[in-house]
Image (cartoon, rainbow, N blue to C red; front, side):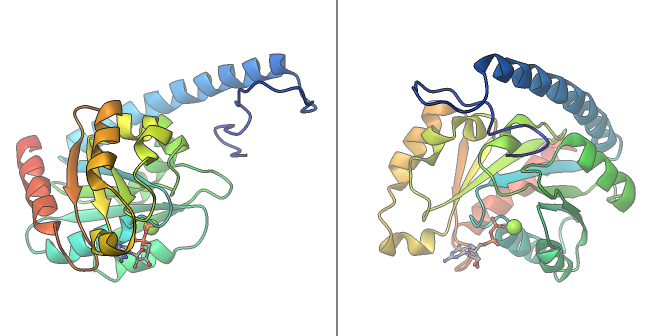
Length: 244
Ligand SMILES: Nc1nc2c(ncn2[C@@H]2O[C@H](COP(=O)(O)OP(=O)(O)O)[C@@H](O)[C@H]2O)c(=O)[nH]1
Ligand SMILES: [Mg+2]
């Protein structure tokens, strides 16, 4: 169970067996969760003010573990470093592995380790911002903890949420984890170089995703071959120009 958002206790199903806890108790957990989210939303507003004041365009990158969030960042930071200013906040339960990969691209980066937590929250991001001081007029990528469930609930104050899904995960993820796709504006479908080897129906995946979020915009990419990245870069540059 996640110690910060209490997920894992809020399950509902018909059953005869005893769980050793009462369902009346579960109601209390939901109330607490609402309080946590209220506080989180206030701090997210504060982050939004921070970003606005410094003209920082912030992107919350979410996905299941291993979809290719860090790979997409490595490519983007390397290919666009002469055109745009970047900073990165990395979120993982343990290790500085991803921060080390980002550091190798020459980008300013800070790592947040959430310990037993399964998502980043606005408070963690605020602390990281105060410590790292990302440059003004930049793009700030926030790579969330790999998890398609809990990060959906936590607004970090970001300008855009990008969900990454890879073709090895199965095309039904958008309907299995609708909150993540509902709260994102962009969906990057990664690892398309593997399409000849896996039974993944891209059109079906998009159809499912559009069912939960008709406004979702898609990019089909391969961080390995570089296919599709030009379209992603164009969107990024255009979006930043529009916001500035
Ligand atoms: N074949 C293939 N592998 C990829 C691609 N993008 C990332 N990977 C691999 O997928 C694994 C997980 O990538 P990573 O960026 O660490 O994912 P993250 O956990 O979402 O940050 C690594 O072994 C990457 O080399 C891709 O486009 N094609
Ligand atoms: Mg990563």
